[in-house]
Image (spheres, rainbow, N blue to C red):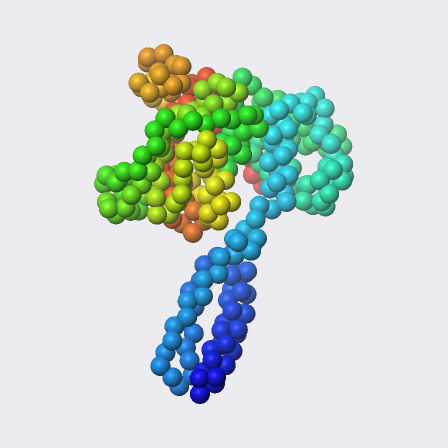
Length: 296
């Protein structure tokens, strides 16, 4: 009798996993809980949790990798504004991909306002891309370490675990008893102060953050180590006056203007995992919005 029950369980589980895999692939959902019941016996519930991130279903696509690499080359001055980029065939050969993959990468950079095409002449860098400030597309989601082509360094000024107040609990969808990280981090680009970030993250959702991780890329840790794909972000940009911490760490003067960015960042499944307040010196940072006219 036990062997018969086991056989039914294995059969049902195999069928369920087959259909579950189909559902996950087509709907890009990475966690499912499935109940499997025995035949004419007391119900037994099996919880099948599939994390497709670990199996590579949410890996960065090839065209995204190429987009990031070309972005770095543009800001590093590898390509000149006076000359066209290598053509699609040359880039396809260099990266060992199809022309369609290269076209998707170039289209992405064009939509971000970094490139434009001349019929019969090739693809060029917009001259407004390069100036004295580091300019990022407004919709960048990769984090500074991936978004900036230059050498970036990070140091933790403050690293504590606290309990949220009402405002933080609401922004991060937490209870007042849920612990959160309280992080103040200075980011340097080419050894110059670039941004002072005050970040709050739920400890239970983003476990294992250490001072060593704060010296590197927290977003890379979240996606590569914790296998949590990062999704959308809500950002609010304002102009503020320099505060005490800005004067000390950003080398600005009292009453200097500061670019302040408040943001809530979400995982792909919709859970908020970060609320941060970032302060940038007025002369070091800009966000770029490329407003492309829709063709009629």
